[in-house]
Length: 250
Image (cartoon, rainbow, N blue to C red; front, side, top):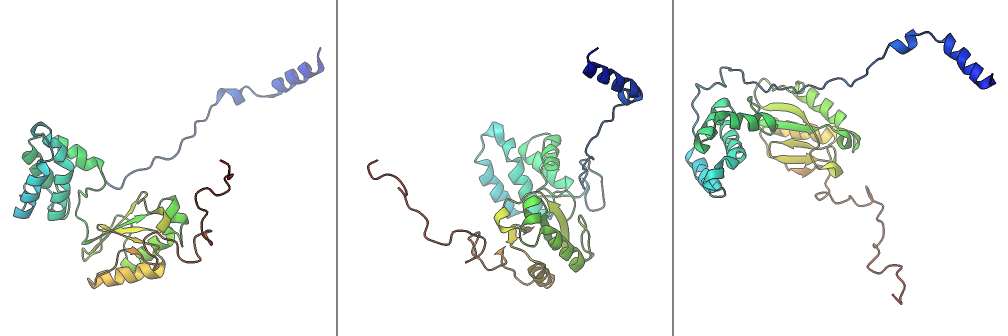
């Protein structure tokens, strides 16, 4: 008998059959949202609370609807929900129902949109809505978003998903804010605050506690996303122009 074949047979006999009868399946742990898709009536969010757009927003709605053919005005669900959230402070069930009434669509069509996009806050949030990016670029950029998150928690005394007792601040974690070059980044309401450090973050929060104005953009002093002189770049001399290293006879 072939020596190699004999060795294989001997090795196979020494293995217990149980090694081949069990199969283990590995899977990643499920990740759950901190919000539910279902609506639950609360004292400050139920269909019995009336909502109506104010006069200024009614004018804006008229202008928005001009962009859509009559039979496709349901396409205005998103901008109208945004208007409602800005007026009401959050996208309540009453806001959704009023949008459905104005656009003449079943309320479910509006609920589907409001529960899909995280930009719509279906529960009350603070006056200052803090959205800290904690994805990979912001974790690696600068001092890292983990230090910024710890600073916010310590300064405000709240955890992610919570609102301060005075109703002034709400803190959430978000996916990529699209400003990776200026990491770490945090959005406060509509504006981005970039190049954060624990010190600049505390300064921002302390000013907001006193309702003092704060300046959006990089907190490091650089202009937008331009490199800081001598930092964050390998471009230390005049860049090559067109035709560099191209033969003269071409």
